[in-house]
Image (tube, rainbow, N blue to C red; front, side, top):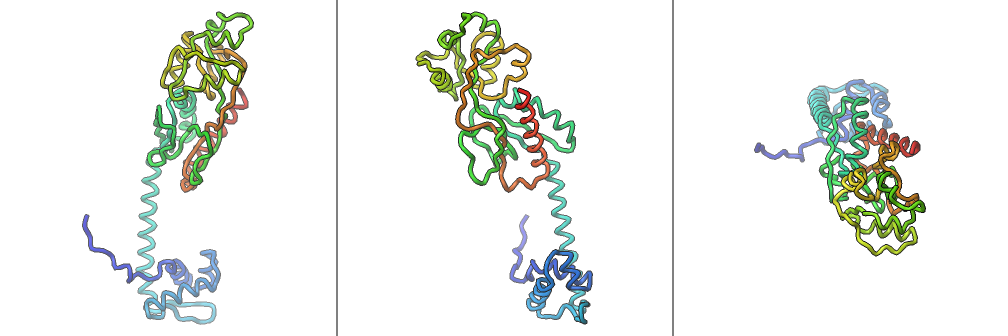
Length: 306
């Protein structure tokens, strides 16, 4: 749509319009100041700015009361209409934004094995908030253009314009099926563990090396199987085909049920943590704040119960 440009030079001081509208409606500068949480001189200054810009007197003053002049009444009709139109437009945009789903970004494993199991509870509590969950298998960065909030891993604190809430540590824990573990000697040594088929994730190729180094063993072998996500590695572990190296609370149900067990008690903490991330300038969004507070509380409860 092509329209002629607006001559912005003809606009009056916009910051002064709220004070003028309130003073005209209440016929009192003091009451206008109280309504707008400003000082009496501040409202008087706004009116003086408008009168100077328009070249007319907008109020006649009688002590503490003010009455709009004919020019003031004429201007008030336009100011009131313009402010109401702006409010109507702003509310329309807000309603439109509320109808858009809250966009959540995370990775395949975090989605399948942790977050997706929890989202139905949030939807039951807050049916007015629509959710859109997207997953990414490779890119670890939060996509602020296409997501409102992310459940991601960050090795270092994010950039200052992000709000970051750590949820749980990045710990390496080897897990496997009880049947596979029973094939080890009773000592269940780290050396014996290294002889089992180890499943590695190609984006985290050094995790097994890191774990064995912490265990005091120089592991020089190669994992038997390399996959693209921890979700796949855990499925292989559940099937008794190998040992997966867990890096978060992504097998809590299986460990509680006993379909997976810890292959060795050693946990190796790595730098960084899993957490929630969003832009700081989005924190005023009630639905975003509600979601982040709910998921943070749920994560704390899950961690305490583990």
